[in-house]
Amino acid sequence: MEYDQRVPCIEGTTDMSCDKCHICANSKTSLKNTNLYKGYYSSPVDCPKTDLPNLTNDSWTKQFFSSNSNSISNSINGSSALTLRRICILLLVASLFSSAAGCGPGRGIGGPRRKRKLTPLVFKQHVPNMSEQTLGASGVSEGAIQRESAKFKKLEFNNNRDIIFKDEEGTGADHVMTRRCKEKLNTLAISVMNQWPGVRLRVTESWDEEYLHDANSLHYEGRAVDITTSDRDRSKYGMLARLAVEAGFDWVYYETRAHIHCSVKSDSYHSPHDSGCFTKDSTVLTETGERKAMTDLSIGDRVLSINEQGQAIYSEIILFLDRNLQESQEFVQLTTESGAVLTVTPGHLVMIWNREKSLNEYVFADRVQEDDQVFVHDSTGAIRPQRVVELRAVLKNGFVAPLTKEGTIVVNSVAASCYAIINSQSLAHWTYAPMRLWSTIKSLMPHSKEGKDSTAQLQNGVHWYGKALYGVKNYVVPKSWRH
Image (cartoon, rainbow, N blue to C red):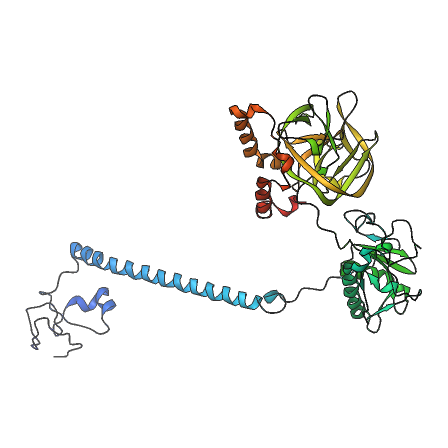
């Protein structure tokens, strides 16, 4: 008899004709012809019909597949989990690779950034497109500096060998400039040599002690220079002006065919105050009809304000956002056609009339332009739009920022917001809701009836709540909304 496969007997016997178990390897049966057999065995196996279960029996078949379906399901789940782990590992490796590639020089996987094409300035063009002595450019003049003054000792001598100084006076005046001007000039000198190999930067005028320029010129402070190239090729001057802009000069002007004029902000310049304020000598109208200076205001005073409907009302001062009577600060000063003058920090919100939309809106003070209309409290007691006829930057000492419950205030007869830095009056007003609630609660307390709070007279600096808001604004407020 031929035996195709030997399967060990459960009973442990070597007898080929064992009939005590169902695992027999020497009997012919119809099992070898079934699909189930062929799927589990690689070679034919003969088993007796009498000892094997009937595969045609439905109950046995269901029991068999039910018992095996669980193992198959577990096998599939295990395979899915393994596949998921492999995908996670691949993603981790890919992220590590991209991070490592991005840590090297250049821009990582994306490759080096394409060089931006520089456009030369045209004759009589200046960048930025505003007057030189404005806050958005080089700022206001702080007064001429003479050799005998204490400020002269703060100026620096530039002896950069990559720069040619004309110094026609023979006094070394063209080498004298502020620290900021020196830094920008040295940066420009490198750019010129890279742009035109063999060509150097040439300075024809810097600090002026002979008063040969216009009144209030920044040359008198060492904050301005007139420049050319060493080869005096005028076809290069347009690009030279562009390079000066890229070097960081605060104002660049293609002034004449013979030179480029550049200037910088003062070394004592600091970024605009991190809150909105009025000058300390600005005045407001109280409910009693008295006109008070900012320095004389107290918490609890009711001053002229403007509501959402544009009507004049009196609103209570609940706190001072900022108060400093000694610090020097640059302000925007706007004058209306009736002579009303408002002087505020650049980032302060001012109410203007939008003629195209026929509604009032708030904009930063340094973005108000001539012919814009601001709201003015006139002699009749009404608040009406008036045209702005003059704008200029001024430098003054001392500032105060009162906050009313209404969030607005009329200063020097011009309507303005109490808020700054964020270009949304409604958002700024909403953030101070807790302080308005606290003020209302305090007003209900018995001791609050004794008199006005004079602690504001002792305040020096930004209010604690304002400091907290300024600390988080960069994380929660979009950059496009901030000053």
